Length: 336
Image 1 (cartoon, rainbow, N blue to C red):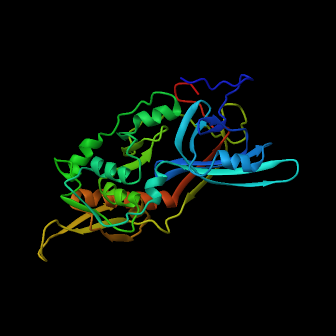
Image 2 (cartoon, one colour):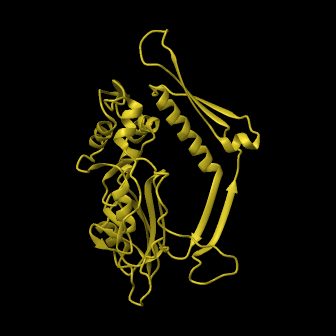
Image 3 (cartoon, rainbow, N blue to C red):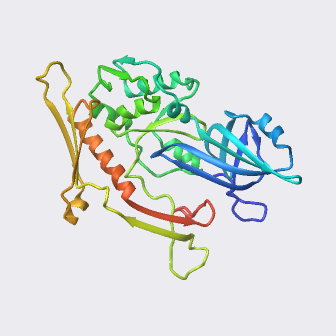
């Protein structure tokens, strides 16, 4: 377990960034966004500096490697996107921004239609990594190790078997399909996600900048406890503000995915996969949403895609937000 204890005996959970292997100065303010479902991770920090801004800009130009930490724990690794500066005769303030290494897949377009034949999902992602210069990074299947490194503790969970999931949906050989094509003008990340979404897989980066291919684990046991009590300001209460929204405007009672069965000719059969939202049905809604998807090759993949689209709609409409004191909360086993 890493040491979060500060000099005053309290918890040291300060956010800091290493630029080209060097610690930066104390932040005036910062904003960090990191989530499996929203990629890539991003940061923006404001730094006070007694140095000339031009010296800082020369030392840390765009695409400077960085690593963002919470206390002693690295959270994500990437490259800066740019900077800005303001100042007067007595002080300088510098704003720096950057994203994790998945930004390369997010930003780079496929420059020409590129076919791939008989590739697995892992091989497909590796091809995309090579195209954007990330072939020096690892592609890790399964996300438990990445989560444990970020929080500094063993997570009690059964890791989803990604290989089993891919084989179940894509066939015993684990192939995406016999032939796929990265389309000119789409990003390499969009190319990967078109095929990963149909088997319920997600792509993100770990704290070292390696790519992780895995899926959310709904069976993971709780690791931390959040406490909210009205009028109680003891140390046990770590939530300062909260907000809740349940908006059904853009939610559906059912999502249906249609596709053509693999093969040739006009006589190809149709594939249908659907998923129902029991809560919306109970509310009395009859609001189906229908998609056609040319990348779906089986009923199982059509169902997986319907579930994902339902989940994305529900996530946008059902939101519970907590604001915490500091960046750490007590774990279930009593450790920070």
